[in-house]
Structures are given as structure tokens and as C-alpha cells.
Image (tube, rainbow, N blue to C red; front, side):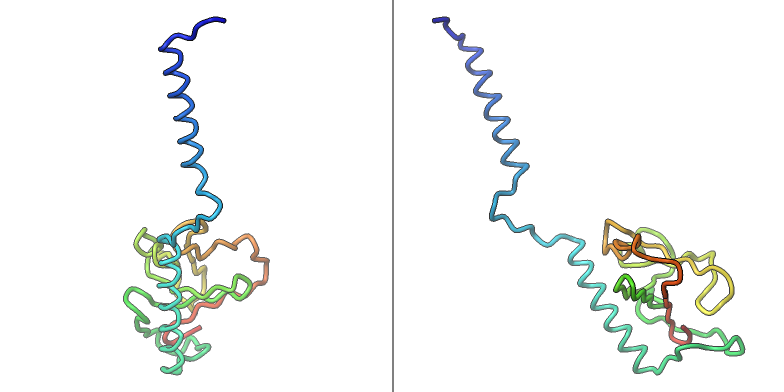
Length: 157
């Protein structure tokens, strides 16, 4: 029977331990429950913000539409939030922040500043993440032509 050298035996044991350790790290175990991450906390914060904005819009009696004869005066609905976007097919209500920088998108949707405002002619551009932060557009592929996308401000929809 051939003898195994001490170096070979140590190498085999080390390889076994590294492989076993890697498998343990890759599997959380059968009873492991994932801890809430930043996305879940962000989604909860966004839901609370939406609830407050909807209450404020309702209490203020914001019109559901406006004519172009009305002055385009509007007020912030929350810090940095000028409107609320609602997309029924996606079961989405999300605050719309001015701008498309990382800070705005970390809190929900952003509005491209070079686009038009709600109620104006032209393209109103909404920007949001699908797989990070609060994931407002995670179901975006489900949208179909003709789906309703409603953007409501303090003075227009």
C-alpha cells in the first residue's frame, strides 16, 4: 500500500475545508430567513410618503384636471416631491422627485427636468429603477399600450 506524504494529506484536508466552508457560505441553511434589506426599508418609507401625499392632496381638494387657462402654480407635496405617479396596471403609487440623480431615484421615481411638467404638451419623462432601491418599475414589462399613467400635482392631474 503506497504511503501518502504529509504535504499531500494537508493539501487534501485544506481543500476539503475550503470547499465545505464555501458551500456553507453559499447556502443560508434550510431555516434561514433573509433579513430585511435597504430595499424593504425604502419601500416601507415610500409607502408612508405616498400615504401622506395622498392625504394632503385629498385634504387640499386638488383638482383632477385643469385647463391651460389656470396658472401653473404648484407647491411641493413633500420635500423634493412635486407630484405623485399612479399606474394601476403595476399597482404603483410613487412620489415623483425633481431630477434623476441617485438621491432622487433612491426614494422612488424621478422627473427628467428637461421634459415638460404635468398638464403641459410634450413628453413627461419618469425615471425609476427596476431592480434596486425601492424598485418602483420592477413590473414595468407588464405595461401595455394604452395603460393609464396618472401624474398628480397640487394643482393638476
